Length: 124
Image (cartoon, rainbow, N blue to C red; front, top):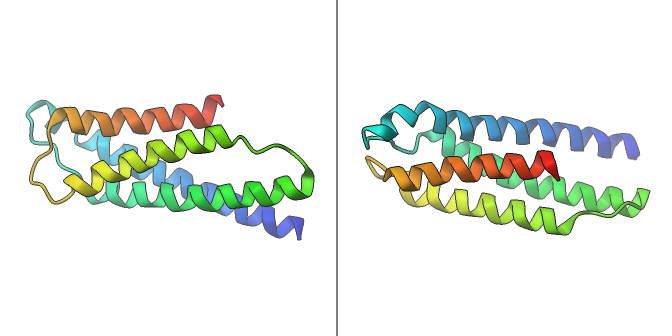
């Protein structure tokens, strides 16, 4: 049973990283357009945000399950902070995805929140 949980965790973690790559990559491809106020939400950003959100939920469930077996503490504060950040990203992406252009401040916020989410994952 433990091997199955590890396989699920590892596959989900890989998909989570792919979501981060899609979201951040989509943002980076539009940075030049952001300077000319022509940036837009590309599909990679939408798919990446959804992938991060869904895989984050799965990873939380797996962590809770592993904690009940192995007996370690799950950092609920970190999970709450990361969830709040990805929900903010997802909300911005969903609100602005159909608009022809996005305000640079909003677009920059998506990038900064994405980097904040990565920073939380790495440092804590």
